Length: 85
Image 1 (cartoon, rainbow, N blue to C red):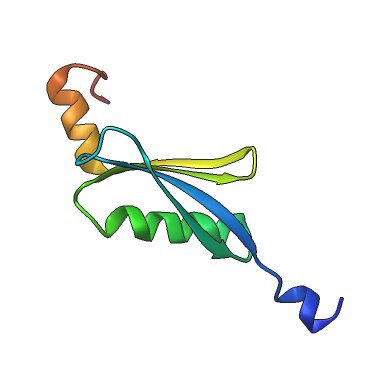
Image 2 (tube, rainbow, N blue to C red):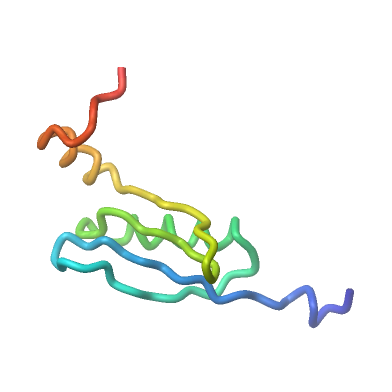
């Protein structure tokens, strides 16, 4: 494999659940692989207290769904999920 082939990255899609909007926001990130894309998505999720969750997609393949701690607390308060024991 040549050096040019090793540096190829992919475009991943982010669907960001933001408490200020009624529909997810769409964004794209450039990453070398799924693990790198997941780390970038985690950093994006942590970058705003308004971000409740992020779905990471590679085309039609969902890579991850990341939820913020704030979303879990909100869901516990409204009774939408059971607390972990």
